[in-house]
Amino acid sequence: MALTNSKIVVCAYHNVGYRCIGELLRQGAEISLIFTHEDSPTEEIWFQSVRGLAEQNCIPYLTTDINDPENVRLVKEIAPAFLLSFYYRNMIRSEVLATPLRGALNLHGSCLPKYRGRVPVNWAVINGETETGATLHYMVEKPDAGDIVDQEKVPITFTDTAQDVFVKVTDAAVTVLSRAWPLLRDGLASRIPMNLADGTYCGGRKPADGRIDWGKSAVQIYNLVRGVTHPYPGAFTYLDGKKVTIWQACPVDGSGESGHILSRKPLVVGTGEGLLEIRSLQFEGEDEKQASDAVTADVLNFD
Image (cartoon, rainbow, N blue to C red; front, side):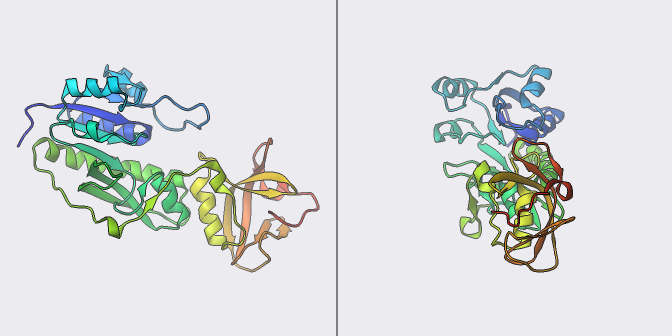
């Protein structure tokens, strides 16, 4: 059944939020209000501004939490047909999810039910996955657990960083929304129940989670490096008591004691399985350098 009330409330942030709002506007959707976030001073802001997009298109927006009582009342007053969430960082309460007349939907950066939860792109790269994607699904109280409307897969190559994959996932998100919105609007969209037993759930990551375990294989460490390299906080270790962030590396053939420096030009380190060539690193408080020029002290092991 086609919409009679066409109002939408959108919760959005990051490039996925920016691009998906742009797609809704391209299709003529009526966005009544946008909830977004203030940028964090501790985070590298490399993505486009939802707030700026709202201002450019004269769409009312708020940077306070949609779950705040005054915002819950405001959403109820709008009585939107849909509530749509695109990389909004706050869990949305059940009371809010029940407000839209036609449902509340979220765009998630994985092929659900795999990688439910936080930072799914980073986790997919860290775990060495060869594909991921974007999924549009209905929101329920349990995170990333509602019926699936549509999804689009993307490949992860062995050289992709998390940012490379995020670009692909963002494009996939727009593709999914471009297909799904006309069907949602006209009451024709599919609803495929999600089998959570077939999936995985991952929590958020803190900078401290980037510490390298040299007992793991060279490929596992490489996946961690590319999964949290720029613009993320990076994978790190210690050398002679100094913190060192490794921004670029590559597994190579050979064997050596875990964490032991086997050569400096190139900088090659032993792991639990195979060797890791470090190509770019940064000592805490210093600039990033080519690894072959950075380690000159007579030290033998990364900790």
